[in-house]
Length: 434
Image 1 (cartoon, rainbow, N blue to C red):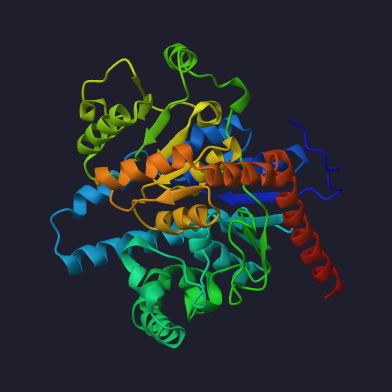
Image 2 (image 1 turned 60 degrees about the horizontal axis):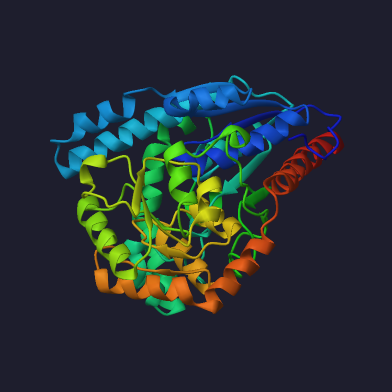
């Protein structure tokens, strides 16, 4: 789809960092495509797994992590003790940070701008500090924005949210100074030496976000801004970009299954589910008790029980085609999946696995679009919550409202790139005036 925005008169050289899963990569591919359609050059820095898809978007692509490099490193540390393992990890990260700084620094010029998600904040911030290159931070989930007044909920740190504000503030400050800052000072020692800049202090609370603009790639109604978020945060909305979305299709078998009866419950427990076989066995019993149909999604076919005609198995179908035909989506709580479910208007039962997924799920729950279930093997709780989601008029109304508030991805990406261009031009203007 062509951008509805005018191509800017100044051609930027946008350097976009992205790593992780599809949920982290796809929004940045979308931003890159919008930039390229406006006439800008895009260099996409990612891992080996996503080199081909990034090249298919038309970008210059650089890989900072080889095909087997991560697995080889993890295998090399398996038998090490805790201290030795920590030293190995810090050494690996230090080397990668220095490598990335060198890789990018050699490509910077007056037309460059850096766009970086959390894993790459420190790289972009170092380069910004050394060369003055404009830098835009991106944030995919609210949990990746620092707040003490309204802290996000992490599965392993839920106790932190229960503390009174004064105690939360103390715990955070102590943790940052005694754990976080020493770790980053160790990791950033070599990159800072090479760039000839001092190592930062208070990395999370004062340093690593862009001082120019932080783009939160979600809506303000999904997460209203706490009072202590950085002032330069701007929400853009869900990016909703899927490579080759127009050409994707459901498999013939799945299409026929969906056509043959009522909308099924879709079960997508995610790779973090500790016991997929037990989960799918419970899911099968629930489907049979409810008298509904189901779609089980997993690449681990060896963990599936024998399935009746009322349940279909698929490895990884295009969600934007499947979800509008589902009655409920059961999933792990990735923000990209939550956004797709909201766009489809389908209720969600969220089984958070780790990190930000509890926080994402609670936000969907507060909007009335779903429920959170932290124990994926509690069959009674799963059955009760699915019954509610299937039959609650309040949930249906909340899903319809969220669906109406989600804009087309092209509109959101256009707004996002408007902000990127604004930062670039304002920086260039300041440089001319100086």
